[in-house]
Length: 340
Ligand code: KG4
Ligand code: ZN
Image 1: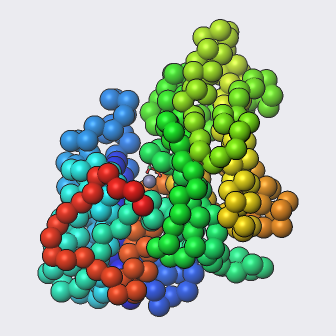
Image 2 (image 1 turned 60 degrees about the horizontal axis):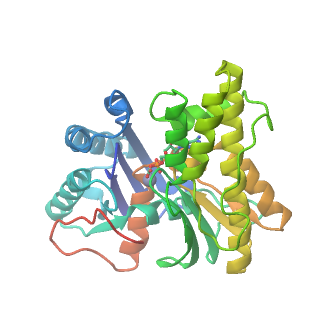
Image 3 (image 1 turned 120 degrees about the horizontal axis):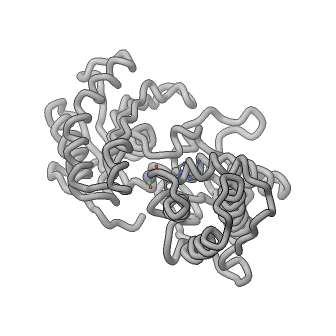
């Protein structure tokens, strides 16, 4: 089954073709992402109306480009998957409208996918580990993006139990806000992580929020305030900036690792699957790999380009659902707020 995937929930236009007949990463026949980061940079955040308009401009050219890269004619598609939510309503409607129209014109099924289910399943698209094979449920998923921080017990495809989530800022949001208060340009998360590479470990130590009590929820907003105070009271030299960035990154990474260990205990399994934009963070990847292998398990990640928003994860999640016989009715509708 060859499925076209369309992602347009926020500021990335993502298109991909996933072919279920090909095993592992080869199933991803082509994928392309157009980022609107430059468009929103001068506003310091995503402007919803501009995002929708840019999706309108970029989506169809990207569909053509992706099909050409996959070496497929549009008539060879067996289904179309799109992000139906959560996200910005106007941006979602662009993807949903294009996907539903294409599916109708081609007389193939269309399926709306939950954005976070796309992230959650993304690591399963990669080639199986030579020793352990592909991760198979049950496992615990850590979803860490700009809008979400969740720990989910995955009992099977479509069978998800929320174990814990953030009570305030998402991990990516904390990265972005902290970067902004130290004057780093938007979007700050990856820039803060790059700066932390030059920082001295331990020069600044921030708290590991909510790790001193039981439970799997998170709270990252206080960390940002701690950084603000440290930054204001510092000499604000380039080295101090890097040291603070390192202290912040270590606090987030350590907090996530502690909670992931506890989530594995709670769920009684030893495989943690990580996805969402913050899953691209190098130090988080290394720390979780270490944590999991020390307990005889493993941590699985998609390649960094499939951690951030993309159409591949939507094509893949949609293909699994279409294969299971699910599809949408003819109405175009999206769900901007939607629990998984
Ligand atoms: O999943 P994603 O692309 O979009 C959402 O659905 O939110 O995640 C974007 C988030 C942003 O907050 C960004 O700053 C963060 O992921 N991010 C990172 C890194 N790369 C992206 N945070 C820390 N380290 C990184 N290397
Ligand atoms: Zn996302």
